[in-house]
Image (cartoon, rainbow, N blue to C red):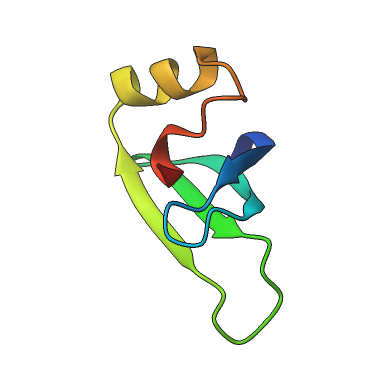
Length: 73
């Protein structure tokens, strides 16, 4: 598995309206791309996700602004 790119994304939580941040990391393996998402909450309620992406979706993710945080809205 190869690291392609990573970034930190700031967002507003829709329920509590508190500011938060998340980490997004794009990996490439032999089957395609995997996007790892993790909020920066260091408590036991930390949320993590793995999303399988096709080439087109990975390119869109790479080219979008880091201010968007589309997977966290």
